[in-house]
Image 1 (cartoon, rainbow, N blue to C red):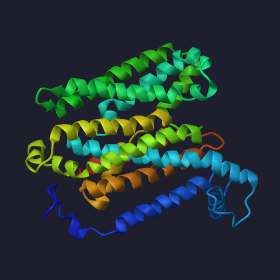
Image 2 (cartoon, rainbow, N blue to C red):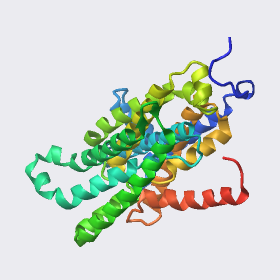
Image 3 (cartoon, one colour):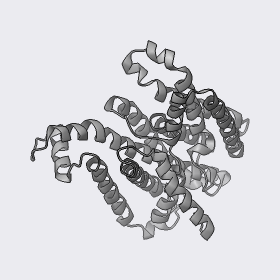
Image 4 (tube, rainbow, N blue to C red):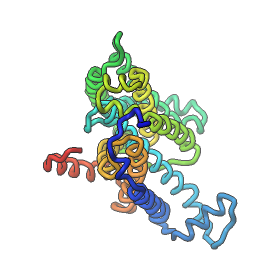
Length: 355
């Protein structure tokens, strides 16, 4: 019996080569991200150190400083890059399917705008609260406020878009645009009020960075992102059906309103958790799904995993470029993704190719 979701005809043509290539790309990106930097660490040293750290024993002598840098500095940063890249890419692919719009991404709903305003507010006015909190909790003040801001915006646009007959996608989109405009105005006011030191912190947040991430900050965000990605992937078949329209998806047996509600909530959770720890990183959620769609087709059962792999690799490479291009300083990762993403997007528009 055929699948009640849409069979796009890709199943007959599909083989494992695109996923094999994406897996190899991710593995190479991981090794480069772990090994390259101010202190170079070879691939064999990386494997030996990770093996020992996992309790499997050393099979190669590695210096204590190399081990410390690898385990406590680069590993959490690389894992964060993988999680955030996968999260933003999967969220973008899901929203493009929900809106049936190739230009949709998490920033379209105002999620990143809400997180940015909350983060800027905390940077300017949160110093007294941070000094009153224990050191371990104070480190969480900024990412937690950003996550709350992202989820608060999601709640607002959801409340605006819900009608008696269900959630209206067009209203949801327009509400997101309005929230983005309001967030831009609020951010302009906050930057006007901020002294020079805090203004630099706000700008660093706006440009995105993976720096300064440790294991204590990483684990809660990792859990939220992995749960959200898993929930989005479970909605792949309904997303396939939604591409033909809501009425058609309903007639093949899907409960449309709960699915739309779930998609909005879990994409906000994924993107909000990512933005909370890294700041604003542009173009990943917009461009990666287009690359993945070209490689594996429009079926979301393959598109979502491919987007996760490609998004993780892209952010690893972008972070590596940002770390190396202006040594000993560090270029914010959002600058790198925008430099790559904007020209590519304009080139695609110039060629007028379908995404």
